[in-house]
Each structure stands twice: as C-alpha cells, then as structure tokens.
Amino acid sequence: MSKRAFNFCAGPAALPEAVLQRAQAELLDWQGRGLSVMEMSHRSEEYTAIAEKAEQDLRDLLSIPSNYKVLFLQGGASQQFAEIPLNLLPENGVADYVDTGIWSRKSIDEAKRFGHVNIAASAKPYDYFAIPGQNEWTLSDNAAYLHYASNETIGGLQFDWIPDLGDTPLVTDMSSDILSRPLDVSRFGLIYAGAQKNIGPSGLVVVIVREDLLGRARSSCPTMLDYKIAADNGSMYNTPATFSWYLSGLVFEWLKEQGGVAAIGKLNDIKQRTLYGFIDASGLYSNPINKADRSWMNVPFRLADDRLDKPFLAGAEERGLLNLKGHRSVGGMRASIYNAMTLAGVEALIDYMGDFERRHG
Ligand SMILES: Cc1ncc(COP(=O)(O)O)c(C=O)c1O
Image (cartoon, rainbow, N blue to C red; front, side):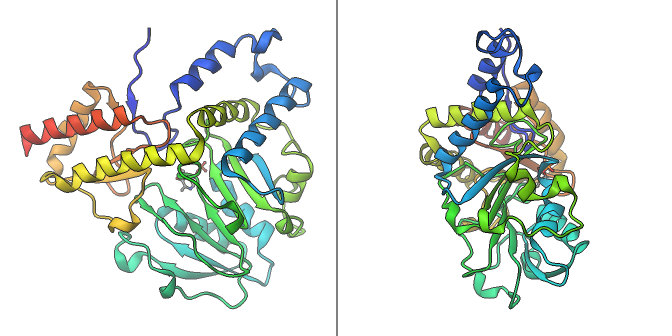
C-alpha cells in the first residue's frame, strides 16, 4: 500500500484520493469497454457521455444559468490572458483591470498587447496586503469589461465580495478559488479557471461565459482562441484534453458526493479559520494580509527568523507535509489548502508548526 503525504502544493495540487483510486481502477478498462479513456476517440459515444456528464455536474455544482456556455479548453489560465481581449476588447476600446498581485499583473501585461488597459485599482499602495474597496476604483466610462483575479494564489489575497459595475461585464480569474464555496455565476460575464487546483489535472482551463459575449472576437483572433467557435463545437474544434476533462468530471462527482459547494465551503471555512487562528496566536509565524482579504485557499506565512526556513521545510517533509515553500517571488512559506486538503491535513500541519515553535521559538 502506498502512503499518501499531505500535499500543500499551490498547483498542480492535491487531488481527492478517492478520485485517483477510481481513475486507477478504470485506467486499463473503462466500464468494461476494454480500453482506457485516454485511448478513446473524443467523438465516440462513450467519450461524449463522459464529457457531457462532466459539464452537467459542473453546471449543477455552481447552478450555472442556461444562458451561459461551459467550455473545456487548453492552454491553461495563462492563455486566457490573451484570449479575453482578443474576444472581448474592440481594437479601439478600453478594458478595466484590477491589480491585486502577480497573476493580475500577468493578465494586464498580456491585455496591453491587444488594446488600451485602464488600471482601475491597484493593491500596490497597500503593499499587496489589502484589496482597495470599490469606492477607491477609477472606472472607465465605456469599458468593454472589468477583469480581476478573485484569488491571488501567490500573495494570498482573495475577494470576499463581488464588484458591482452595472452593465459592464465582470471577467474573473478564479483559477485558485472556483468551487471552493457557493458562487452566484449570474453576476459575471466570464469566469475562467485553470484546472490544476480545485478542478483536475493541469493543461485544461474551464471557461464559463455568458452567451451574449460570444461572437465578438476580432477578425484577427486565431480560430482556436475564438470562444464562439469553441462553443459551437462543444469544445471539440480540435482534439480536447480528453483525460484531463474525464478526471475533472470525476472530481465534480466527488464534490457532489461531499455535499457540493455549500458543504465544501463550510469545511474550507473551518480549515482556514483553524490555520489563520493558529498563525495569529503564535509568536513564530505571521501572515501580513488584511484579515477581510485573506485567502481561504492559499495561506502564505513567514517565520520570525528566515534562517529557520530550511529546517522548518526539512522537518515538514519528514512528517509527510509537502510543498510548503512559498513562491520564489515572495519567499517564506505557503500552505495551499484547496478542496482536496482534509481538515486532518491542516491539523497535522498545525501540530508540526506547534512542535517546531516549541523547539525553536
Ligand atoms: C490565479 C492564477 N491565474 C492564472 C494562473 C496560470 O495558470 P496556468 O498555469 O494554467 O496557465 C495561475 C496558476 O497557478 C493562477 O494561480
């Protein structure tokens, strides 16, 4: 029997063990058909059923209204940074962007290649430790859309509110917090999420787009990047990432079995309160983020003396607590506690942190 560690990686992240076991059981012979999902034609009856069920389960989980298309695309979330302006920003138009961290800035830099970008708000004056309230934003009169990242995976800054912009479509990078708690999809024009955190394996990106935003792509937009072409072809204009799509479907089924996003949201709340509570009460560890803007999914923390970082990480690995090193751009530590991370995993981390503090604090 293999021993599974507690994996706190920001992405590709831990997947539910039950999902991996099911994929393993089905790997060689999917439901008695004598072949693997990886070996099926994406046009076959079997695969069509797999793909449609995955989409329906995601629709059920997020109560996605019928006037939204769900697309299973390739190129990760990063490709969306270009795909969004190519589809939604007219050549002479302007798009508003909110800068709350590294992923926001990557989307801004890419959008600037395609048109005029207005930085409506930035967390820079707050050292990226707090999100500026909407009353501080400078919006354009005629923005084609407003883009923001609901959860900054590296900085650990998360919106716990949805901007209210009237008719301007909200376009949101939810790569690291989709499906982590209930969400009112009808408030958004477009939601996208790279799969490798709360959805499934990397390489796949899920796009949920309101139908009236389809068919606006520039004439120069590559065929493969045009949302309408993807939608009209059921995300199969070319061969999709079939295995990633299938595995994501297994994750959606698992999430339904857990009681859906309401139930997982309650558990995620307990996990984040337990971990931040411990950090705030300790003398050795700290998290700098404004309490209302703290991420439920990615918890960055520092040790009071960074010479302790190495022994902290080595001791963690010995206990099977993996991938706690912070992103190279910010240093320190980061515990990513997505849906597949159990409360037992968070408690094991806190146990270790407490022991380490008693020895080194
Ligand atoms: C918030 C956010 N946006 C975008 C990305 C980029 O995703 P991908 O590597 O799938 O392009 C990531 C990756 O971790 C992310 O966390």
